[in-house]
Amino acid sequence: MSRVKVSRRSALKGIGVAAVAGAAAGGSTRYAGAAAASEVRRGDVHNVLDHGAAGDGEADDTAAFQSAIEAIRQAGSGTLLIPPRVYNLASKQAGACVVLDADNMTVRAEGARFMRPDEHARAMFVVNTRRDEPLDYGAGIRNLHWSGGRFIGDISQSNFICAFGLHNAQACTFDSIVFENCQAGASHTFDMVSANGIVIRQCEFLGQETREDTANVAEAVQIGAGYKGGLTGGHENWGFTGLMTRDVTIEDCRFLPYAGQAGPTPFGHHGGVEGKHHQRLRFLRNRVEDPRTSLVPPDSPADTVNRGLLHLSDAHDVEVIGNVFRQTEGRVSRVITVMGFDNGVLAGADPEDPARGEFRSPQAPANITIRDNEIEGFPAHEDYDAIYVRGLDGTLVPNVTINQNRVAGGYDAEGDSHGAGIRIGNVRDSRANANEITDYFRGVDAADGAVVAVELTDNSIRRSAPSAPAAITISPDMTDSEVTYNVAAGFETAVSGDAGPGTDVDHNTVLPPDS
Image (cartoon, rainbow, N blue to C red; front, side):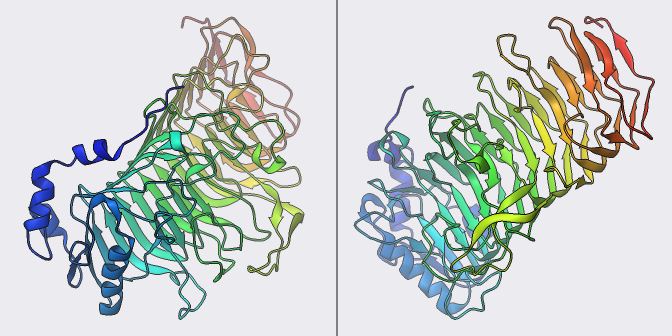
């Protein structure tokens, strides 16, 4: 595995002498560029250079950034202008993060680069719950719009960067940001708890540490509940609300390999809370290429073994629509995992000192839409199907839609065991229709738990590998359902297994492999 160290010289090279000089000489509040001027929105403009930032990649500019943000906080609104230079922030010498504590703030960082010279566990920009705010959504910050900038880490030196730690943040948008070589170990690029209304759009996440023995497979964007110990982003050690994160949208972003490292694991959450759920999570029109595996070593804790590149278990109202997931390195991984929880923070626990353990009964996700995605090249071994939606035994996941996905290239002839393109179990009132599944050992596995009132119709399941027993597998635990009008090619039979009462299995077609 090659490792590339990003030097301060290479970071400076990408900006250009003219741009840096212009920023220094261009007045106290603005730098040249019509786009920057036209996008200024609220209140006065505060240029970090005016507050003492050097922007030379050497001096620590943390205090200057904090001074500019404090001016905006006191004014009630404003624009934080970060000209195109290299900023050294949140280093060990500074001993602190940059705290985003100004509401109604627009940040313009086009062309700016953010670095720090040493390994450091804290986040670079954080939202801390404010002591003068009620403990509720928005107690950390409200109405932040951040645009532009490039965060430069160095995985080879364990200098990865949690760019944003968001604690009780509300109505925040982050767009057109590049995160280079930031993702490794237990770090997250975005780490948020008790957040509400967060949009991350048109950003690039480049590179994630590829060591497969890393037990904690960190997500680029992680969400969690507001309990002590649930946020690694460098917040102050107080102000926990117990609130779940809700209304998170990640759209039109790219998660790509970089400098010999794999692409990042995009999105997920850790831990469950008894009687509560994350809500309204959307992953839309993103591109994920050659990600590192989402699997973890066999001796890892039990609550990590069901991860996927997206793992949104125990969430309600999930949309995964229009994305491309592509793997050319042959890494085995689930792609999308949604399943229940039966352990975590117990009901009624104190957010400041949460009791954790087994729930009184399992709880299930609900209202899951997985549609119009392209998934290609992920070897599907046993328990690592491409799309996996399953409630824990004793629960049923309601209202699952898995439609019009194109899933290809999951058959590994050398594998000891094989999975499916789509696997569902313990679901009800759901559907998996009009999917195209190519070259998997099995197309749809619907025999892993109860399947109640489910449609499996109009799926096209084809194989070019040697003949396999069935394209779709069902069991007596499928009741009041419909498995009809599916077309299989290269299988011995379209559907295998005996369904339970009330299930129609008819009008399924088997064609030769080359049809």
